[in-house]
Length: 160
Image 1 (cartoon, rainbow, N blue to C red):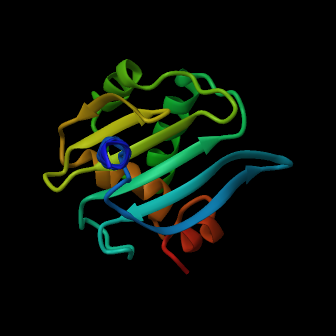
Image 2 (cartoon, one colour):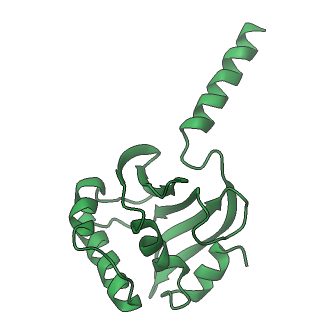
Image 3 (cartoon, helix red, strand yellow):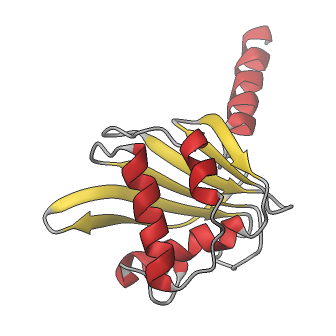
């Protein structure tokens, strides 16, 4: 009985520590560029449906290539500019303090909490947060905008 209780406690604590443990998978897909798969994406929400601005939500990216953190930040800013998303000049510098370079099979997760705080996890370890509630909608627009770079992936992530 004692062993069963310990196993249950470990299971509960591992779910509580997971940035997606209390959320439901909405959709998933892959992002490729030319012949290379860049990452596998999964989107989670509390309701199990895509509802913009209804938090908590999480977006998980499991990378299939090595990418330098500066390149991740540059690509993020370029997408904001391409989409016409309003973004704040301090965000790239804040991201530079949080995001590491990624290697094949590394996972970066954004979890947006009820209060709009964005928390980044790298391989399931909390790396840092962005307290600005304007950040999450701007960042998620890269995947969920009607003009996203990959409309098929957007549909998949939304559960369609």
